Length: 97
Image (cartoon, rainbow, N blue to C red; front, top):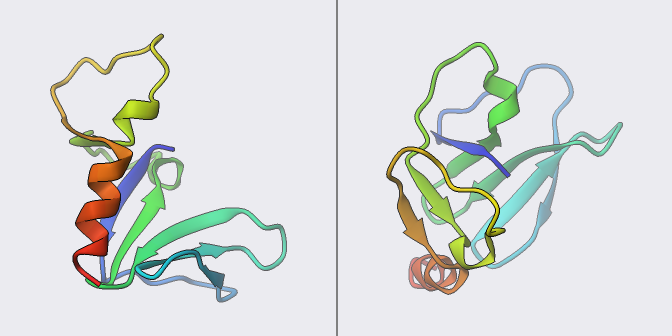
């Protein structure tokens, strides 16, 4: 999933998204009507992470990759990024909560 870290100041217009607490440190948001994934919300720092497709008309820079140990071997991004394995991600968030 390509996603954009949006901080805590995120406003949803229209119907309020439904949420599901998917771990001790995060919840996922989705459309109550169609089930479309809308965000990943990190609870310890109140940070929202939204799919990059929502920002088609706004520029952003790919700066990090997570779960790099699960990345298919057939692609590589052109720019240099910070890379974390799945275990490094879990360790980072588990220590916050």
